Length: 289
Image 1 (spheres, rainbow, N blue to C red):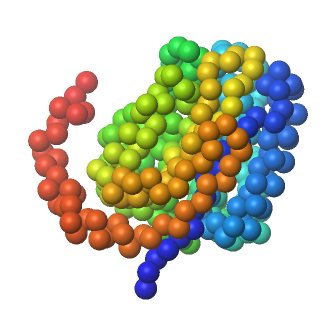
Image 2 (cartoon, rainbow, N blue to C red):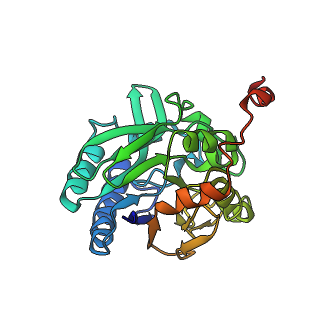
């Protein structure tokens, strides 16, 4: 029996000025996404991923302690509780990237994974944190992830997450493949001129090297007052052969959908035996300080 799963990616423009009160921004963005999630459900989406820190601007464009106020606990915060309700309502797996408060003063860039019956399955904390110009000051806000590279067994397949800057590090992408991931999502906030030329290079390469499907989400638009660059959208899915099979708009809200035939993973792995032919004992240099 063919295993075809309809998956979706949501990229969304900031709908409230970043200079507004944090709670006003969050409410506006959450309300917007509730409507977009319903539209994705109408399109038959079974597995959906939102963009990085979906309920706010990309605030690491500056270093300001006021943004600690955007964080919530996972899974007991209001946003994840709401998303569990929506997942159950729509019968949809939802990957929800937010700013997580672990303890007062301890924050992570995190994505929660919720099954189609509304069950919270777990979370991935971003492992690699940028701290560089122009305006990617994540180490001011977040601790590096400490949960490894989990793979989540959902109703529709084995799902994993790798967040934004993580995509520049192939080691974690390989760990997700070895962990059995069939669909890996990479929610991002990346700008033109800095890494756009890598956008359609690195992630298809991960899909090929590890023979899974990959959904890459990038937010669209320019966010004042920082204006660090254009978040150029173009969210896409690629298959285990590295071919882009669906792609979103550059500068607009979009719901990108694709039907993923998970049986293709086995077919490709029977041709390219990368996991069989690995030589772990020869790779010690990778983990040397």
